[in-house]
Length: 261
Image (cartoon, rainbow, N blue to C red; front, side, top):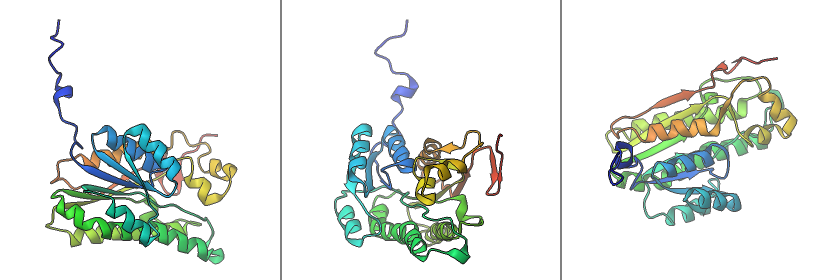
């Protein structure tokens, strides 16, 4: 009979995130919330930021994280958020979204501006503000939650694909600029992910949002992407996952999706 005082190898192995502080933006729902939960389970000291503080605090309470209000489009909000942090080892730039599906001929320029402000300028704003702390950590990580829309364009997606192409270029450029420094730059680019809000916010109705996934067997869910994020962040620090593209098996490309009748 095994000695109950002895630990198994898994019990004695330190959690990979222990002693590291991870900031997750856009954490009030979807991929951000799932990532916060997964990183907390990996031992990270997780700080979650988003505009919807009530949902954020509920998440933080459930996973053992710290909640701070954050609007990445507001310089004052970003400054207050950064000031409240003692240290940062990991930044997960997840805040973003799509807000229209119009062809270019019918472009909603307000939606374009909002999409670019949240996905690109907001990401740059927070990354710039936290880079000194990430450098000072001695083993920092900047992870961008991009999209396959940042690699391939499609009809009706110009505002979102333009913004996500911007995020992809931002990650590539920052990696070049930080070469030789102790900061990894990682991009995770999901394809079709079924979350409670992404398509609803973009299309404006539950019926239209449901139609996006109609007949698709097992689209990705937020936890699948969080699993990829956690894996990339917990590799030995000399290993940099430059770009990880993840799709459901049913999606071979942006326009190639298997749908069951």
